[in-house]
Length: 313
Image (cartoon, rainbow, N blue to C red; front, side, top):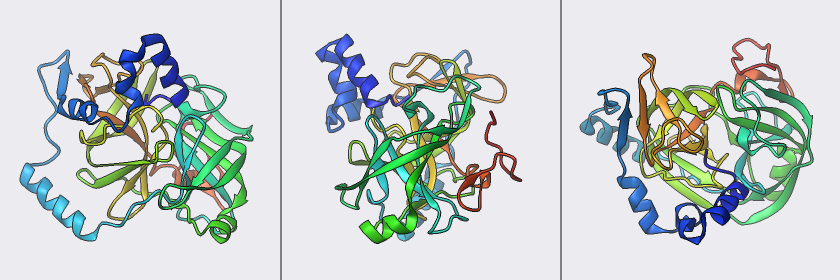
């Protein structure tokens, strides 16, 4: 996982100062260049993953995207005590609804949900730093409930705030980010916006992973970045924004740090045939298109709603 910041700092204290640049220096050009240069390492099979599309087609898609790209800023993102996140709404949300914040399941303040565990309706008083377009904190928002949290099939926590979208817009001029309710496209331009580090990573959707396995957890239909999005600890929970629409298509959550196979901080890809592939230095996100169907009028969670496929308690 792109570790919550406290976990990162603890790891550094144990490992010693020499390990610091790998996780604690997001501005380090040498680290980024090294991570970007690493390539996929197939495991247990001679097969390697084929490119999502030809170089020519990818370049054409990128040119088209650039022509209609929206400007992505920090507006609507939040900083947590140890992670990143964003104020989000769904296509059916109303301005008068209680606002929601989305981050990772592994950023939950009470600890990682166990495999198979789904948490709903848990009391919370967690606070979030609301950022404006330039990344300046303009307010402190507070939750009153963990609406939904799990690390099974996906890696997401959704908090309900004590204020509405309309109140946030009126007080700070900031709108929530909309969670797209359709599957993202391979080759799409994306930005990973970290409220914690106040940093924006730019890359493309490299492809999708049938199963992404890390330690005891398994995630379905994960989104893989091209190497330029070399996210680090503290970026967990960052919204992944499609640059053509400005909508949230995923939530940043993990990357293979050491080239190990399916261990914590070293996720592996598993295809439908069971073939395992390790991509050292490559990072991932969990798609969010399936979440809107699970929320009804008033931003209320309904896991029995038609089309809702999120894991249930």
